[in-house]
Image 1 (cartoon, protein in one colour):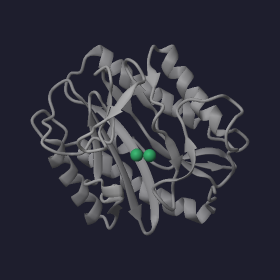
Image 2 (cartoon, protein in one colour):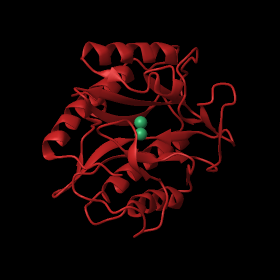
Image 3 (cartoon, rainbow, N blue to C red):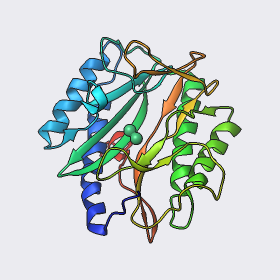
Image 4 (cartoon, helix red, strand yellow):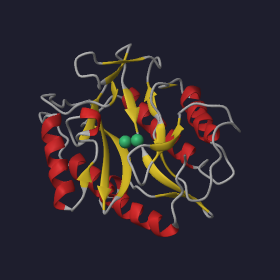
Length: 256
Ligand code: MG
Ligand code: MG
């Protein structure tokens, strides 16, 4: 069942979303060669708790950390640990927080120092795909319209989109209905209605779309061909005035 949110509830989700935007920026400031992903996770978890919120990934189905931190060929669900960040890497931070009972979800892929032009282009196209998908988050459209728009933009740029994982409803809980795939057929899937809040999150591979999940930890999702992937995510409300993007990259990109 898809749970609709009132305007008041959307404002409460926005409060969580704003704090999440600040959190990603705070952790992003510490990304540099030589630090470990465990260190970044620790900084972020402290920031979340200091601001009266809860990191929901921690403990979710046994996930051990506040953040998913995914470097290079790790698409998503990287577990923070003794992974040392290096110049030229891409580092995706993905986090879900709950503030006053309301939940927001966002992810951003950061370049570390000088990254290759190929890596830069992958990150740029993935972020473009996110906003193209968000643009379809209008009442009367269907979930397939979002996925189709994301897929077309990525594929026309020579990239592929992951099939195994997708966006989702969010707001009261970390994962709600509906699923929001990054591929699809226009005019198909659940109808988008005013009051829906969803996470749109393109996971885009430079090479083939095939991924594998770590047998050791059960979480880490890597590209099979070892090529890099990127991931950007926003929480968005579907309103009478169109898409209302609740999370923000402003604190990261405009140093707010
Ligand atoms: Mg996320
Ligand atoms: Mg998500």
